[in-house]
Image 1 (cartoon, rainbow, N blue to C red):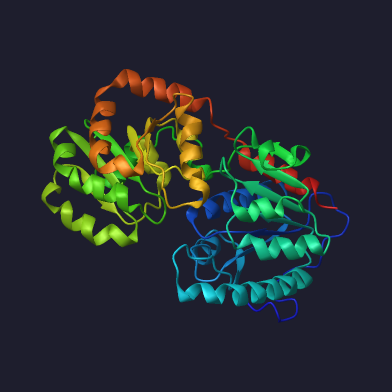
Image 2: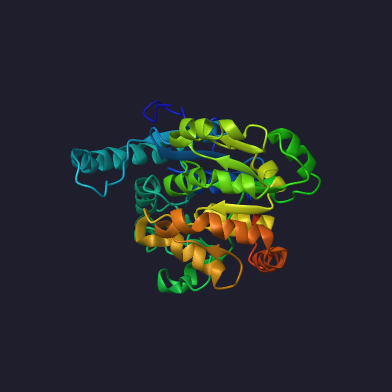
Length: 384
């Protein structure tokens, strides 16, 4: 899609005067934790206002360039890239890619003429929202984590509304701009009623054994993967089934490791597309503590062991996890301790049904099932 080509991004005349109808740009991405909430917001807007026109802006080569079109929306990529934490020549490209992204973002905005722009986090949203706000376009941020990323902290001064998923965010953002909405999640997991039987058939699992779902995020999680790999004998010996999302990078290793358990309900997949069915069959979940994962666990009421990633800005996953742990709504195993503690914590939780029930009861209280709808309402309010 070429932003230099006149009207290439516009498929209909600009809306005029009709309340709730407009052009909306949603920008951000990089991981499933940013993409799926963005798509949920878009779907909620289209459900309320079918005539709205939505364009996504993401980062070239990242997951959103595939997932967004699959969900039925147009997307334009910016050449933006993040700064690598280790010393690398790649970092020399960052200023040039940022400059080109700002130029391209201005062309996109001039052509598409959005009535409002939405940033969902990640460095891809920075250039688009910076240019949009400088051109007087109303803007909304959706902050998914309990500790905001650098991009959203910078943009907060220029936007009109900030939708958050955790309380006490006044320490980071202007209080008058904050709206507590929770995080939007995929609509298919909102109601798991009557999906368990279909899920068991989908993944080839048995109804008479407990199922442990392992999700390290859309890209996988090496520490979790290696801990599970090392504990396969114990998992099998304790009569548990395993549905293990490995991510692409660990898929071949995991597939080789589980060959000898082929008849014992241990299933590996690089990526689980039908997450509603995965949650439906899960009795216990092991997960990273990304914002999307935490929100989904709350909504699906799953007893969970959280292993926060240490490789994220400001250690925000630990802060996400502690928001649950402090409410006795999840169990924490630190990444550094996972290889020695994760499997024993899992066995203890699976065997203790009273702990499971307590975790389910408490995590349910933190769920926000109408988050996408509330955010859609806030977006529409900003359309002039």
